[in-house]
Length: 276
Image (tube, rainbow, N blue to C red; front, side, top):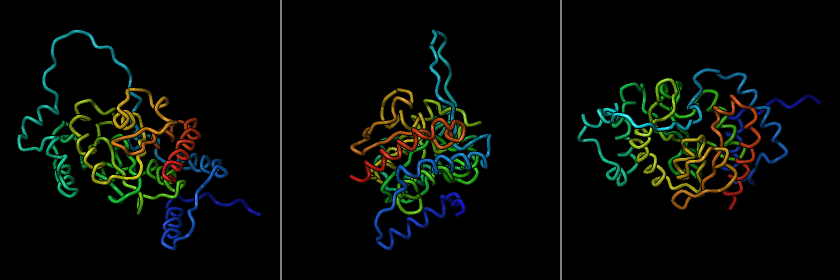
């Protein structure tokens, strides 16, 4: 009997969606399929681009501060000074979904507005069971206006399918930053401060059953804990009363196969949370 061909994440998501429409019993890719999951990750990594992976920011490094002259205003502060009619964070907290998205699409509150091609607001279902929060758009996302496309997007779809979820009908996907940092550099503090009110309002409007934070910046922002990702994963946190699981960014898995097995364990933890 020949070997079974590897699962395609798009086909698998379609199968799971059809099963749900037919009210079939839940189907999970349990622990017996972990090796298949890891093999599929390796295949996606081999086929995907090796440079400029989506949202693949480098791990943050601690920088010692030294006394010195006060720096001038940042690019974000200069942009904010030129847009006095831009809504403040408190105003965004009262917006409905369409109004929030409209403001995000024209936001100029940080310097990324000067270098972006697209504002990457979200993908998926605003009435989702799960919200996936990434870090920042990459080159492919900046070009298409959609989060998690390309190799990292295929891997995220596989991760979601492994717990019987898909962006088509049960997952909402967004990022901490809505605009791409040039060269996929790490998000800066003023950029996170300017953009995070959009994310917080998105989460308040969607109000999912659970959250999955992928990558260091998403994990630290939503947990409120300034710790390495490896020390944040493996437990269930909470954000505004919503269960929160932390794991590695799909783009990071394409660079470091040693993180695939811990990510699988995190997905099993997420499945347990969503099971009840």
